[in-house]
Length: 64
Image (cartoon, helix red, strand yellow):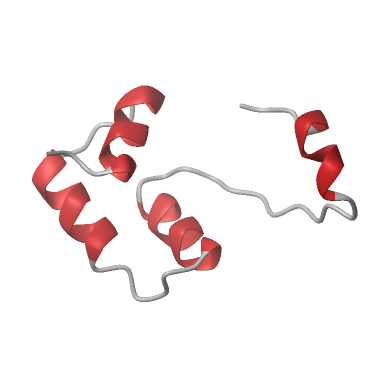
């Protein structure tokens, strides 16, 4: 079964091999958003961190 990371790459249309992507996701050095950002960057996907003062404002964050 594909990981959520591999499914995400599918939805973004990023070329990848499911087995390799699943292994890379499972073996992330840092199991944090920073680690996920680094993994995404290795696939050529830029990321951006944002700071949200009030969790009620999450719905206002624009999605890609």
